[in-house]
Image (cartoon, rainbow, N blue to C red; front, side):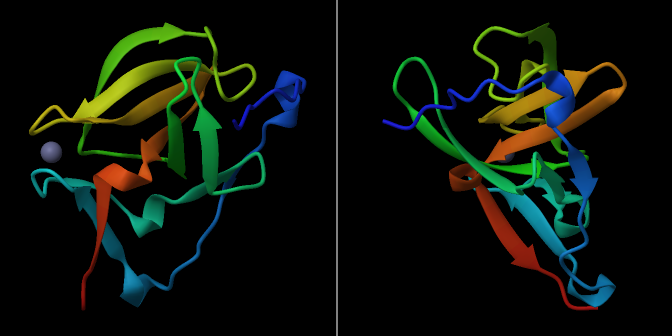
Length: 130
Ligand SMILES: [Zn+2]
């Protein structure tokens, strides 16, 4: 079982904006369940050196998540907790699709910083052509 057992100081978690795609290749990322636009490839960021992370929660479920600076199609249940957090120093809240309320992932915050960690299985990439 995968564990995120490494203990790192809070300042060791780094958030970086990473432009992986050219402007003409913007991809919308939509809810797999209802097609609601959740975010886009423009908002992909790197957290702690990686865009995607794999974590296993205390119940034994493994999730592969991607990090985004903004997810305008998500509604956040603002009730942050640091319990079992996957990013040291960041508290998390549940984040759902604002249209169909499917659980999409989590919103992480630390002071003024925040980002979305969204479950890859629940998202679909839609490439748009300009
Ligand atoms: Zn949805």
